[in-house]
Length: 114
Length: 116
Image 1: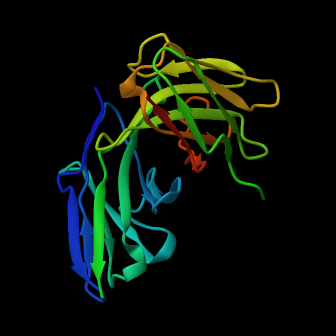
Image 2: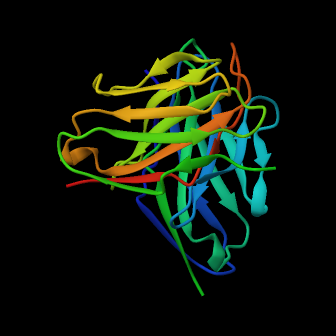
């Protein structure tokens, strides 16, 4: 069965510092991996996805994520955090073996301090 | 381009009643997904509709049901409401889903359902 784990409920970082939000996954077959962000009182917004190819994926708002097959991880990163990056981040994995269900992690709340 | 829209924004019901939530996908999108976001529980997959058919459902009881109309809009119905059904219900849409599809989903702002 597929699953996604976000081991940190909350990540705190100072503005200007690099940030990492962790995600590990378990899926049959090749994974399709996604990151979404949810700002307060709003729906989720797509940030980036990994399908195949280059392990480093670049997305919106300066975010990037690195796919690591051996560690089954897909960590979200940004070189320099902004206060406006404070939000709830969800990692998701797609089941490509027939169900085509997207499973979301529990979410990690990012706080960026000025 | 208009995004995914959901109505109503807020819905207050009492135990045992029925709730109907509506979703209009982005123009050109044929797949619609429903998720439940209860406090502290992340997103739980409810239902997936594609081309008018229910393609998959999550681990929810049958009192959670829905349908997709010919214009690809969708309706989620929750019967016999229980207190624990209180949550934010999110609808998402994407392009046509077929085998090996990997399209990202576009989310609406959600409907907050409160069951008293």
